[in-house]
Each structure stands twice: as C-alpha cells, then as structure tokens.
Image (tube, rainbow over all chains, first blue to last red; front, side, top):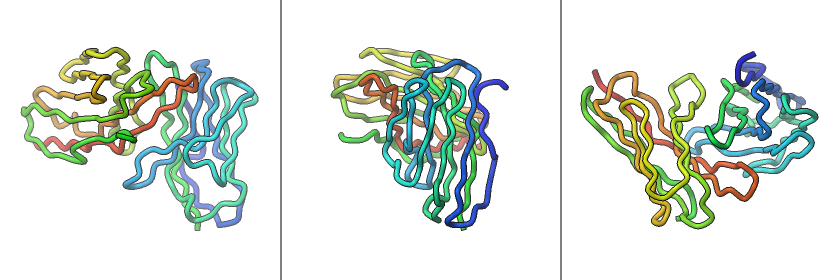
Length: 111
Length: 113
C-alpha cells in the first residue's frame, strides 16, 4: 500500500441496501476525510476525523456514518442507500504542511 | 465572499500561451489556502499550501500568489502544455483545529496542441 487505498473502485447498489466504502492509509496521518463529488457542486465534505477515536460531521452528513477505530482506517457506511447518494466518493488524509492526499475514488450508483 | 469561488469556470488556451486563474475566499478566520491539480479519471494532487499574506510558491512552470487581506489567490501557468490540461481546485483552510478544507468548484483548463 502506498498512500490511500479505496475499495471498491465502483459499485452498483440497489436502493435500501447497506454499503460500506473502505479507506486505508499508510502515511500515519492523523486527519482523514470523506468527500463526495457531484457535477456542478464540486467536492463536499461528508464526515471527517481529526484523530483516531474521534469523528465529526461535514457539510452533507445525512445518510452516512463513519468510524475511526485506528489511525489507518476510515470506513464510510450508507445505512440504507438512496438514489441521491449516487456520486463519486473520495477519501483523503492530511498532513497540514503538504495538503491532502486523496484516494482514487469510488464510483457508486444507487438504482 | 461567503464561499470559495473560482474563475473562470473553464478556459481553452493554445499550447505555449501563459494563463492564470483566480480563487476568491473569505478573508476572515483564514489559516491556509491550498491549490490542487485534478486530471480526468485521477484523484486531486496537491500543488501548493500557502499561509502567509504575500506568499508566492512555484513548481516548474506553475506558480501561485496569495493575498489574505483581500481574500484572493492567483495560479499562473507559464507556457502551457497539453499535459497541463486538468481542473485546478483551490481550497481554504479556516484552521479552527479541524484541518477541514472548503473547496471551490474548480477551473477546467484545456490546452490545445
């Protein structure tokens, strides 16, 4: 692993199903984030974690939950997916001096 | 300005031309301004993190300036090349201890060979 790994790369999900997007980093960054990217809206923050054991809500948290049991992992869960959650999801981690490092994204389609 | 705004939304330039675009942001509660380069089908990559008024950073043909008092930053590309084609994002860090960034919607640059 080098940097941030997201899985899956893409997924088609039936509405109402539960889904967890995985994110793992190997840089020992304290802060991690989940963003969604939608056409015309740019990157919007869903949830963040400043350090292991803590999480916080971003701009668009409804319908999503996160956990941060350790420094490396920051999974994002959709408890009951809806079509409006169709998006590209990016996980990122932060070293404040050098900016964010982003994962390669998960393209999620809810049908 | 309440949000991070970028202009223009998109532009096309000829190979070899120099270009620049603007990021405007709230000047209050400012900690840092980030620039990212985002190529199609890839993930954003950090270009610069700037914190001080008057900061100027350079990486190859790309440079950026920062004015925290009036709330703007410019990104310059000298002698554009086709490989510079990408969306350039700026983001404001208000500090507040949370490391959170507020992103602009980006400027999409297309360099025509």
